[in-house]
Amino acid sequence: MDAPDQSLATTTCIIGGGPAGIMLGFLLARAGIHVTVLEKYKDFFRDFRGDTIHPSTLEILYELGLLEKFLTLPHSQISELSANVGGEQFRIADFTHLPVHAKFIALMPQWDFLNFLAAEAAHYPNFTLRMGWEATGLLQQNGITTGVEANTPNGPVKIPAHLTIGCDGRHAISRVAAHLPLIDYGVPIDVLWLRLPRHPGDPEYGLGYINYGRLIVLINRNDYYQVGYIVAKGTFPQIQAAGLQAFQQSIERVVPFLARRTAELDSWDKIKLLTVEVNRLKQWSSPGLLCIGDAAHAMSPVGGIGINIALQDAVATANMLTESLLAGAATPHDLARVQHYRERAVHNTQRVQVFAHRVLNKILNNPGPVKPPLLLKILTSIPGFQQLPARFVGLGLQPQHIKTT
View 1 (cartoon, rainbow, N blue to C red):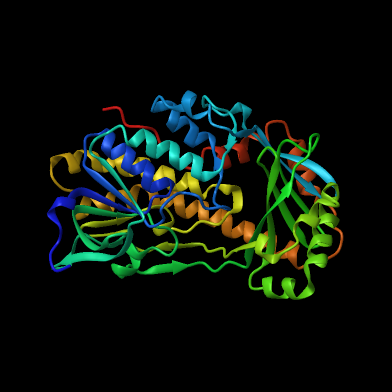
View 2 (cartoon, one colour):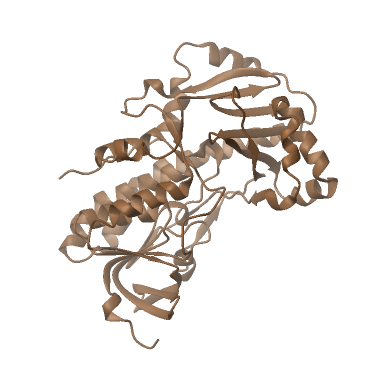
């Protein structure tokens, strides 16, 4: 592997075939740019990933002329979010008033979403998706990134590229190899992900249940719930030591209608730990390299908005860099503009999430029965209040649109 393989040369090499990587690859190829996306796994099938497609993303699909086709895929829809606090239910967000064509969150396994986008991107001959190709490092010359080193099913290769874009998540090889400095906020919680059966007559809408020092989130996937069980960071080993029966009982105590269903959790192998991180790069780019999505700023699962923030990054990047890439190359100034444009919205979103973590930490430190706060009762009784959190969750602080010129 002494020299780059010129047969693999591309204008843009994207590391990571997640939502940001596939969407960005699709948009660049649609604009006539040669793009190669590297995905280290041989398929997209990974459970317990972000499965919420928010109204802002559905609007992007509408602008691409893909929304109607996308919604033929199996999915469920939620038009409002509720919280059950101490046994009382409160409507928190109402998406039906948003100024978009799809006024709901679509719940769909992420692998279906990625397969859909990849299939649409494959219609463009200048789009190449390399499954099972794992980026292992960057090609660099005189401080400039000139491509990617990767392991493939047939051995290691070097891929020359005018621009490399890291969309490879929280543990991105792109930002590590480029030595980009990271700011870590510190997070007091983790999430345990698991599945439980859903029965006819169960609640339709996304629900968070808060009581007895626990927050449990139920995500409706038609015939089952994807369950997020919030725990204090680092306490999963103690929960395991207490035994499965105690864990099952803690779920049933907070969400009584799940009684007897928790028996399906007969092994800790069915319960996955998501280590929550919130961080951001001081600098998203260096010459020849740009990081976006979780590679640039890891988001908390609070609000389920991480996938949509990453997709907004992808759309903004395509809008801002397409002209430069068509002209030959994106300059360091071009790459810095992406961060300058997106950073404030991302940072402010993270600040909201960090504040939410403080609230969650107080909940976890109060093992007794919860009394709904008076402020929550007042706010949720104000006409139109539910539209405010709906805009934050459903659209975000900086919704993106497909550039048409």
